[in-house]
Image 1 (tube, rainbow, N blue to C red):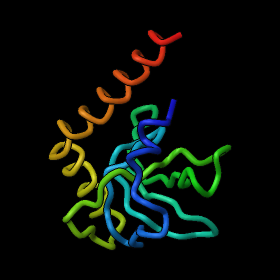
Image 2 (cartoon, one colour; image 1 turned 60 degrees about the vertical axis):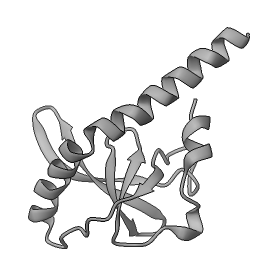
Image 3 (cartoon, rainbow, N blue to C red; image 1 turned 45 degrees about the horizontal axis):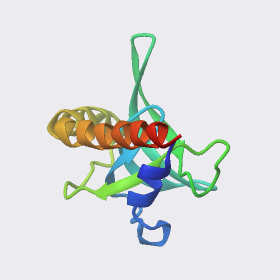
Length: 118
């Protein structure tokens, strides 16, 4: 299911900490690369009408718990203040909405093609 994203991912060794990426992840589409014990992406998450920062592990660090696959380095430099970052991520989600949609459309098209081959 993730093959199309994995084929398009930015190589793990090329990820720049502190920079923003268009990502494929369970709970977001724009994330800032950070390192805790593993490589993660800090993203804006909405759950039960709550908006907060959340971290998703890079797929390469954990195929069990990792859901984030970086697809494109964004030119914008994220703020370091967490309150500003939350608003900034929302702005980028709006700015890159059509690009995010294209990524998912490609994924769904590939998935449909794979089904048709069965």
